Length: 328
Image (cartoon, rainbow, N blue to C red; front, top):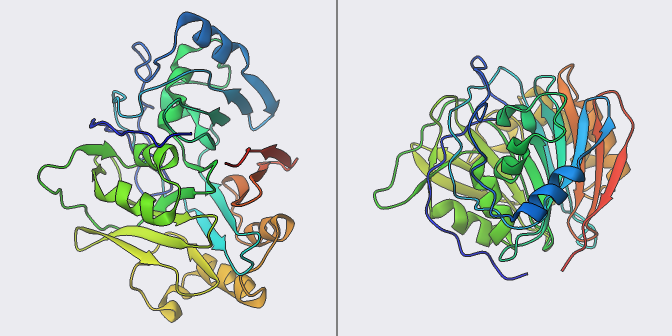
């Protein structure tokens, strides 16, 4: 696929793993804003939605084009839940990205997208933020689902996920367009093939954290590169990997010594397991590592094979599901 040409836009949507109280989800009224589909593509998209798990978990393939820069009305604040992410890069032949999404018991969606001017991807979406409930059949608000990837991987092997940070603020840079702190993941997945390209996408935008606490992000790609992206003293900073793995929980990580990061309980457990494996784990092992830091409110655990294109998903209650993303 050709790299997507990004347009300026404003998005005021925040979601993630963080602190505060939930407000009613955005997008509860009004027409879809992202869709650039014709009537037939809309019908095909909504018709292929299917329920696959009692999470409830749904799957849907988005047929046609969308505008990833169009805003979604409303904002959402977040809850005091945590996420755990890591990139296991010790084996360059099978780099892997993994995460637990710890959140409220909302319906989730496995979404396939293949925009005409961007990279194909698989991502996971909490559809409550579209105003969609546990019976989404025929709900046109699903046409905005591409705007809200909480984690995902594209056909070039670039993966990204988010987690709450403890309180840094973003200092706007004059002249840059502003996008929501979840929307940025879509812009990255559609247009970046490598960690360096993904960092450049982050650098072209101001991130809007209004309505909830700030987020930080873990990136990894098929070459074995990775980075944590977060704000330090109001300025966006990318902390690139200095070993065979990189992890992220809900404490500031950019520039923080490893011994301090390990004081965080979940980070310490991830570090111990990844050290023992030399940063080289397969998907079943990665899922066991995620299980060691699983919490009562973990909604899903997922692994992304950055070269293989294999996605393994374990939603609440078990029942592993596998997907294959054709890699380019």
